[in-house]
Length: 252
Image (cartoon, rainbow, N blue to C red; front, side, top):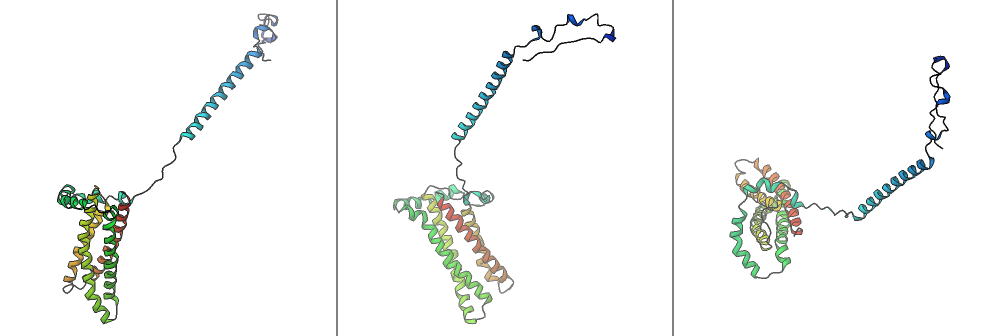
């Protein structure tokens, strides 16, 4: 039983004991100072019940939230969407609207042929892969044989075949660019918004420079080293270009 002890008495030495006699102060057992224990227990039980109910509600909301939480969607990084190159070179490329108008009649002609979708979609990548690895790869190998071979006959054959192969690669790449644009327009896709297109234009520009360099070898033999380093860089660029093209083909 909870009792408020309100007993108070002054020490006899204070001289004021007569003012507040102990008999005039209600005793601790007086009902005036009693707090019913039943009321206190009821309040305590009500408080604990409220806290428990609140905890149950919070737990129920948390469980409901976990049940209704959507599963995480798989994240995928597409190679054609991460590069800032289109933003850097978009002003240097021909207008997409002009190219669409130029290629429009031919695109309509291709659509009228009712070619298989897989041929229109993957025909350009397949042809360019053959050109890159067959002509470009073997032509690059012959270029290294010209520099490092000790066999005069082998070096002579390499000098004859090397420019023909890489010149042919340049021609088919330039022709293949029109095929790629046609393929995208036939599928109603953008033509210059991907790094694949940008790396293709850069590669063709570097191939133009690479084609001019051999004519300057006699006056400046040091350009042979530049020609070899630039050629290796161009092949690396076109490998990246091929990977970006393959990813672009998978994106639609």
